[in-house]
Length: 193
Picture: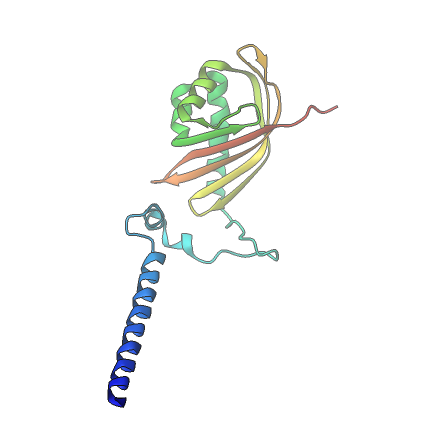
């Protein structure tokens, strides 16, 4: 009888260990991103230095890596080229700056605007008589650059005055050695008294 109990106990222990082992293995497989996932594809496209440890400040936030002067000049030139293209109505130059997945969010719109909607708006409807960028700050994180600043403009959209100062944030991505803007968010500042 004891022999039968020992065998049953051993069998039960073995079955329990098998179930636990299977659960652990299955849990580990779920944690791994599937091969070919968007995250895995994105990681593989990054240079090795993009995933190295970034400096952390006293608040625990990741700091941007210092970009070289050439990167800063390139991004600032692209920003200026953007407003110049709108001012003169140069659709070709503007379309080369915008990524295919570009989105635009503004305090003046009620929905997110995609690339085609933005191009139509900027070339057909927006008439700028002047525009200038101020207080620009460029931060670079690997192949991503974030630009913040103030856009001061005079102009109209379909006869409605859109002049004023706007806070904006642009996100640029370097894909295949070419910088393209993927996102802009802007909010109009209240008029100064």
